[in-house]
Image (cartoon, rainbow, N blue to C red; front, top):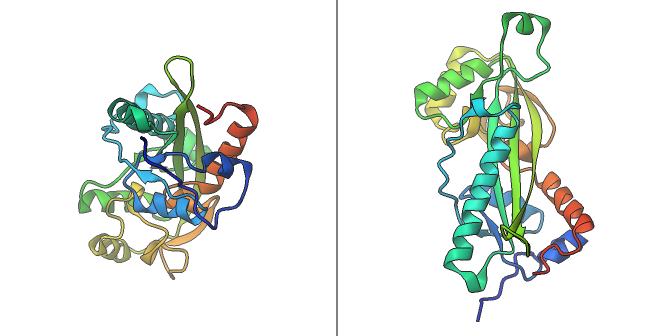
Length: 250
């Protein structure tokens, strides 16, 4: 007998999308505590099964750079979905959520000067060292970056390959103040940017909007910069429920 599941928290809004998730096995293919916290805030507490996907897709293979985090999120979600179906066929997941957040420098639209110089957006993922973190912050300092989270939802269907994929990306602009070098050095030494895409965190410390330095403003979904666009996620669920009468009916 398969174990019971209910990822929907008592305080969750009673919407059609939420109702479809009641008593379902919902899995987040990420070990990020920030993503789980965002989902919990909006009434969903998924099971955590981190993906082991290497996240090494070549950026050059994508015609549009925003496709990169979406493709990575899909790889993560599909990998976890397939693994759980194979290892636990009697308790297969009803929905697997994959996400990948990246930072692109020199947010478009570019200025005329940037276009004349051939300047292109650079992908910034998690820094691999303090030196790498400082390099990222120096590039972002006084500029605008674009935080993009790709989200992929994988759920079972009766036709091959046995699952459907719905995916989207959410984009947010982050404006950095023109900070003196010693502030960036201190931020790197403090370690707040460790394990964060782009080498910074907006929810705590010197890069938060409450801090008197580092950032000027954020245009878009704050939670997207933290790591998961909760509002867009539930909007996508609403669309799936409306368009697919068989969603999670298997």
